[in-house]
Length: 230
Image (tube, rainbow, N blue to C red; front, side, top):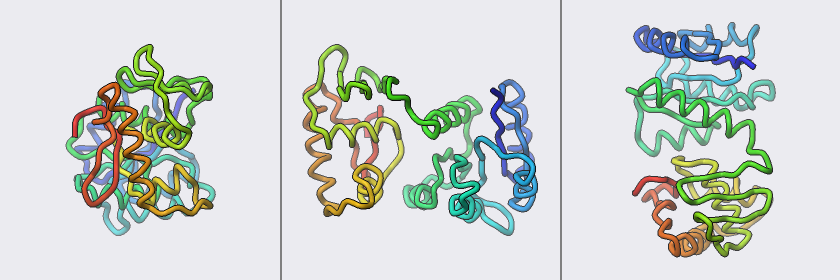
């Protein structure tokens, strides 16, 4: 099935680069140079994903993302933010309004395609039978089991949920409040610092196989899961 992508970007050079990049793929693209043009396109064509520039004339990309995520009609459309902003605070602002991922300019078409594929896989959901892997570390969701290579890890239910969430959101930074909401659920009341206890337990479990470095502390912000060293 052909997937539709709406590109909201006012830089002609980037528009041209994206047109060339997507011409070699199965995606059908629509392009808008500002939010108003994007809204006109969306009135007739519902995109499967939106590539949205942060710095836009009149209405910013972050404000447009906020509007889309507040509307029942558009809140489930994934948004990949195109931005020159690489600071952690700016990334968290995007995630707080519902942006699904971001890519910092300048970027390569290959990296962009990888990000788009990852977002689409994530929002469509992981099947109950799909193995989730990062290096030798893998989760078998249907069996609720975690392995490093052929060796099974002894992991409790809370640490399993935390690891599962991290491994389906690799390289994204989450505050303690966000982890509480997305892993434990908004209806459960526990102290934010309880997150630190479970993070330590998860690291201890992963340390047995040398993978504790994957759960990284982002000072003053929260945590992320990364296949690369911190």
